[in-house]
Every structure is written in structure tokens, then in C-alpha cells.
Amino acid sequence: MIATKELITEAKKLAQDNYEGWGQYVVECYEDSELAESLESFDTLEDWVEIRIAVAEVYADREAFYEQG
Image (cartoon, rainbow, N blue to C red; front, side, top):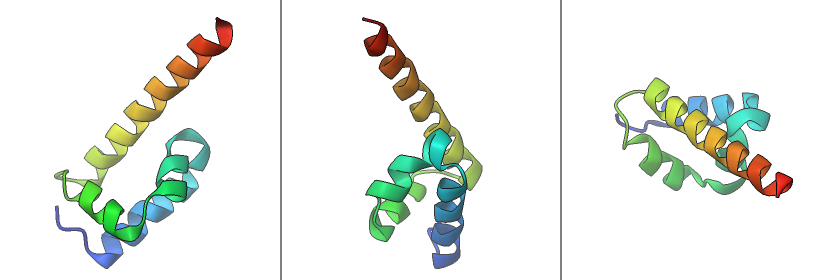
């Protein structure tokens, strides 16, 4: 997809709204140009969000594993 200013703004808002679940890394680490590059790798914003959620779940699982051990 083409990363327009509007799409970048929408992605940033979604990340902020979901900061605790999956958005923290996007909010804290991505500059607009990096976010645009990331978004352009996907067909839809929904696909991009699904990957962000999947990554956050893996991270949480690993974090929980290491906290137990």
C-alpha cells in the first residue's frame, strides 16, 4: 500500500490507542519514514496491525518464559 500522510497518521493513532498491547514499539521507536517503509510492505493497514499483534504476542510469551526461569 502507499504510505500517505493520512495512513501514517492513522497507523500512529492505532499504535497509540493500543500502546499497552502492541503499539509501544511503534510509538517509541518509529520515525515517520520508518513507519512509511513498514506500511508499504503490506497490502492493507489491517494486515500491518495483525503482524504487530503477532510480534507483540511472541514478545510477551518470551518475556513470560524468561521471568519463570
